Image 1 (spheres, rainbow, N blue to C red):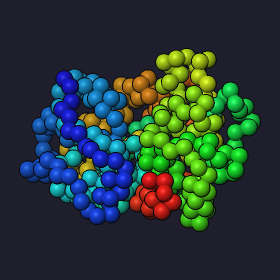
Image 2: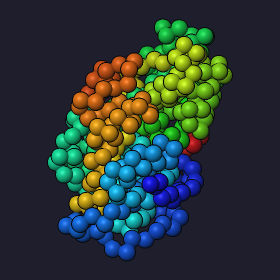
Image 3: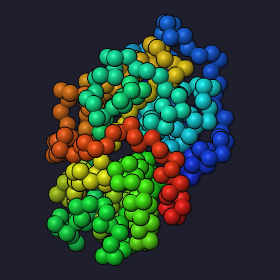
Length: 349
């Protein structure tokens, strides 16, 4: 049974404006908060920061297996987190599926998430989930540098994003500044290297005439056609493209950056909102995301890392453990507003 669909409109700039001004579009009202001890009513309201194209088939699987119908509001992770912050305890949302950990941290900081049951919170190893059981990681993705394999050898590609502000890369680096994963990278840079270093990098990359795009996919396409020599993307975009045309036909190649802020492993994650704490349908959906069926769906459809032990990662990826930065707690990626303000100040969004 197809998921019912509510469309969120706007852009990342609009999401930033929502955070700053407290204004947002009206959302459907819930008549009453669910009772934590209530039985299932076979329905669920989901705010999804991941695309309808990806999530709708997964929801159809979930509904077919459980009979629980899901009403979905789609938008970017920035838009959805801004909407939740504006709606507060008036939100009809019961579950928030986020593209990155930072937005989950922001709603937790605002007191909008609930405490997950132990069996859900402990399903994912530490380092890929919250430290206070307020949200759980679902899948992992690594930030990488895509490079034009016809113009560059891997040895020519910087080992750190710090080097991308050099004059030799002027006008040659493509990235999507409005993308949640890029913003989480900048937030990670602030956390790991400090505010001054992060501002210096943002100022330097902005002055280096970057090629600004709307999405990771657009950035990869520019590299794959030779229009840009480098691109900052999530790893799975390359694997998705390669599955369609064949790896041998990909002009773009990938360089992983273990230990570098530009190579952090971020997660898609899910939180049950405070008003839905204990709701059996919300719990069933999050449990499904962590089930063999849910994890396998993401592996096969998006080439992301599964986070539940026992599920194999897509072939060709370095081990997840080799990419983790032990100095970074994903829960510290919650200061998205400050990151967005920094990007605005230097004209990137």
